[in-house]
Length: 166
Image 1 (cartoon, rainbow, N blue to C red):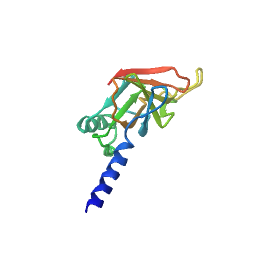
Image 2 (cartoon, rainbow, N blue to C red):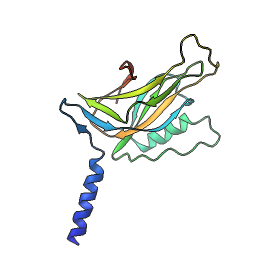
Image 3 (cartoon, rainbow, N blue to C red):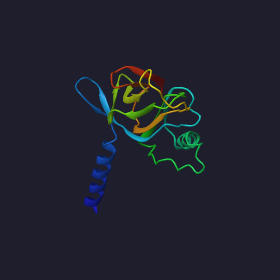
Image 4 (cartoon, rainbow, N blue to C red):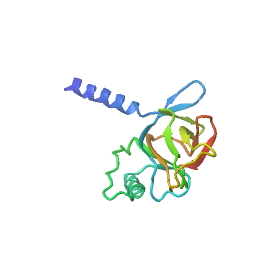
């Protein structure tokens, strides 16, 4: 019986340890991050925004609002809010096709209370014809809950695209 208890304790330690930030010599910590959805039409997100969702009720309401244009929207992906949260990154309303968001890396960096997320911030090439259609691209990603107060979204070139408070 004691051996089974020890094995369960080790298994629990290994599972919860995977969700913890991993530090490096520079003082940065890395957090695993994974996309839940990347959409071209995110209802009710007219302005650029970055937002941390830490509660299941808030997640269900946001997901329903984002998918309000569907007749029968799918249920929100499951998130363990005891260990993780959801990061919303929204480009805001755009007047043409060709815009989009995707994660550029599978880790975010945490330093001095600021979590930095790298994304592929896609925009149509200047001067190129695009379909005239209203879009509102957004990205939903999950990452471990960590001790941060600010969120910074940068593109592949390192340009800051969005910033916000937790």
